[in-house]
Length: 235
Image (cartoon, rainbow, N blue to C red):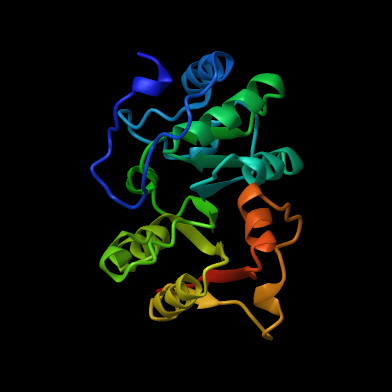
């Protein structure tokens, strides 16, 4: 079964469409080969030490949810070879783009999953993740769709379970209503503490940040991004 006809294995609804334009044959080949090599198999129990998921020795493991085309994820993994990165992206075209890059320039500290991040969060052992990035998630702007926003009590509970003490949850968005939504939900959760000393902090990109295609589009259209950081604290 090729990438274009692979059925969804998820019953969750935090993401929208799974397919965009038909991917090119070389991308489809890279996608199938890449998922076979780097994809996580959630049918097997997670190892107690998630660092063993990687073919290179790593000191800690980070998670990026909804990595789009993989620009930020690949950059971070290449800049931090001593950290393992797990990237989750159900959108076939985005995963194909990253797997094409990985075919040309492989990284031993990067693993991926091509379905719902909730499954990964429920699979991971408690207290094993040193950081979670949720960058430019679908804002689901209509009120009737707000329940599909990834940031909510249930998923913050999942974050809190898998994150180690002192780990950071980073959230970036150019949609004001979703930024406010995330602030409200995280500040209401006992496991997260917002890290900001001034108004300028949350408009300052993270250290080592690279601009993704989506962020470049937001800038062209006159939208200002916010970069929020929340520290995992004892509940």
